[in-house]
Length: 455
Image (tube, rainbow, N blue to C red; front, side, top):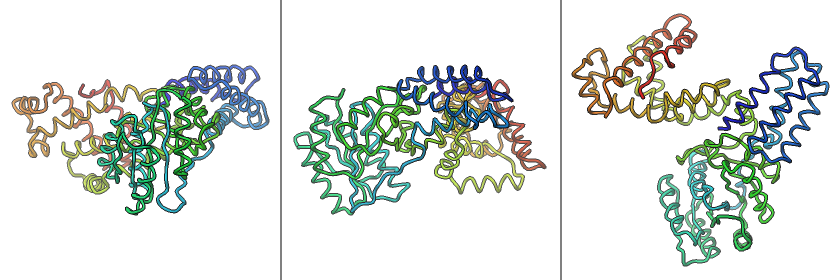
């Protein structure tokens, strides 16, 4: 996420981070680099100008000049201003109304609107324990109605059917009555999108909004469209009383222009970020955490929260007890750890939230991406329970059988077994004195070119 912006900004910040004293020239050249980085990230020009001016004011003031480490103080100023541009604090959905709380979702076609409705339904259900009904008023695209029905079944939300021969207002009103009868806490209304902003579309959605009077009106926008996203959001904001923005495809946005422009241009908070295609890939937007990630300082809080939700606590506890007792780390344990990592978005997903990992994240993604983790899982699945418990039994004839069963090569099996041996050694170190420190030293052997991962 925002890789290009992160690389440019951290490069500029690195030049001043160790300086014991900052001169006007230092500050000017650094701000010039920051300005270039923001413009290349497709941040809207008014936002860049305001951002640079605010940083410059604080950088030449007493706050930085009198600091014991002015370089670090300047980085802190840049971080604070990034947070200010994106909204300072996270803003939750407002659902404080007589149920069902209606959330109207608007946006252009192709921005990921319908998918976001499904993700939001799952988010409210799982994290806020809400009963959710979803409905599509997109009468121009029957496929959108079917898509929402499929998503509703996947996330186990109540789906209210609609059809292309109905009027959007009639669909919305009937859905509200249905949601009341079902005792739903929330009704999410998916609206029609267009390929571009046009007057007819705006008039139609204004009428629909007035009819249902939603408590939340969310605008869904594709983060990868950069400052165009902010301009489109402004057009919708001029037509509708938006309460927030959902940035989709943020995981594929290497620039970050939309995230840094939308709030400043619309005055409306970014409430969620779509971070992948799966229905659980929706994150609340925390400006401070995103600013930290942009400056390669990590986002450990989000990592901890994700671990709390996604790691199988029973398996983790059993594994911890096994390690404490010094029992042998077998291939079944190895497979469990790989699956836990996959649940957390793979090695690259974990590393993206750790400080200072932007430089090695892409290499890690290549070495331990989804494809590699699935391949390793397939190899272990092709082994007998006895082989998993005792990998030393795996001779050449067994390797041939495992290779055929998992669709891999013999050398892939060899790499997997070598990887397991390295992990086994690390687990032994954990049970000895200075366990965690020893284990971290052993991590060097886990990464390429050491043993290498199967490809």
